[in-house]
Amino acid sequence: MKAIRVQQFGDPDVLQLAEVPDLTPGPGQILVRLHAAGVNPVETYIRTGKYAKLPPLPYTPGGDGAGTIAAFGTDVTGWKVGARVYLSGSVTGTYAEQTLSEPFQVHPLPDALTFPQGAALGIPYATAHVALFHRGQAQAGETILIHGATGGVGSAAVQIALAAGLRVFATGGSEEGRALLQREGVHAVFDHHAADYMQQILEATDGRGVNLILELLANVNLGKDLPMLATGGRVIVVGSRGPVEINPRDLMSRNADIRGVMLTALPPAIVAETHRALGESLERGTLRPVVARTYPLVEAPQAHAAVMSPGAIGKIVLLT
Picture 1 (tube, rainbow, N blue to C red):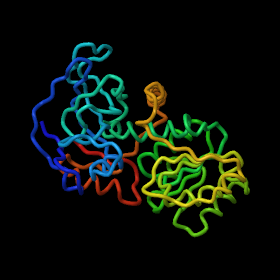
Picture 2: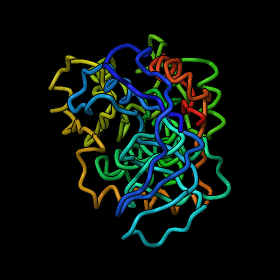
Picture 3: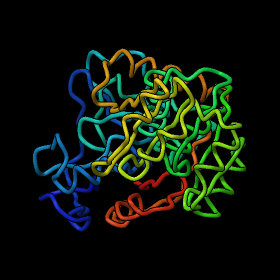
């Protein structure tokens, strides 16, 4: 089979297409024939060798994907060969034509969704769901600001928040991105490049501020987020690329919180409950993953460059 292999950490060009042996499932494993693999920013951090937890070299990147079950080992029940699935984790990596996963990483993919859409579900939708409800305690009727809402996690959060009855504000850095947010049905869209966007958001709440902020680039925005919070507000940090300076008095005066999210640090029971909830929403048709661009597997280096470029609109996906 074909797979992307990383022999050494470094720039995107270390992502090399290779021919490797077909996989065979062991006990408790499911073999999935992949049709698409999701590309996430965390995979670029790992590729550079500067992430907190690194795989042994060589390795195949990726944990998100979608395809059909090809086989399974002993001790696996409840699945049939040929079933359409999406993955939220992989033993062997998803930038490949085949992957091995454990049963808790495999989830049904409704017929209404394409394989590229399925590959957009794992990390983005689970992260958004956990950020909103497990960490953010979001309630219907509250106002949420999703900062940089056009990428994979941001667009997932928009759909989940709207379905849950929140009043959704969102920012986008391009006209195309803001148009997408309008089509998604958000209540108010702002350009975070505008000098007065913070004042615009406060005015849209009649000066009360927002109850919840989903922050995808905390090293740039966190200090600006805090003055936009309502009393008892929460900032949920999903992404950051470095340190940031804040004024703690902005928190103190609002009795506000900053909370972080990392899927790999969550108890398995919470992850399982998250995917059960997502599955119910998928069956109801309230979640519709937005795929920004697809690349053939050989163009994994270009996909890694694209996922880290500003102004992303939807999910970057590799076709396997």
